[in-house]
Length: 171
Figure (cartoon, rainbow, N blue to C red):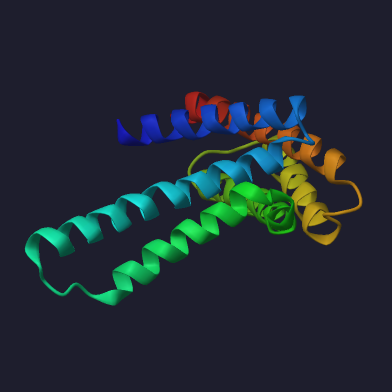
């Protein structure tokens, strides 16, 4: 049951990400960076508030690393939320890496399945295309950012659909 939920959730998330990247290729990286920044800010603030509450109520000396970590988390989150363009380059490399990883993972899965069940070579076309798209993205992330993001979106949708089809055909 866990495997079913995991595959379905992973597939749906990939399809949703693909649609967002195709529809808004220019905004998607900045929005993702801003969301990640907010996800750094929130726990940093919560930890900082808890630190000061515990320190004032209990009057005990708390480790200073908690203060440093929470402040660092807030500052990093603010930087990401306020100047997301700075982090887009790193984001583009991560997208390329995810494509490479997704393609390799699907190829390995097909090789493992092929040990027990004969599989047509056509099943390998999609993972190979995803792998190629990832390599291109890693090698050339800046010159064609919109094209790369649209291509990544298409590959994410294909990946999600392929995962669902493979799961239902091979279960």
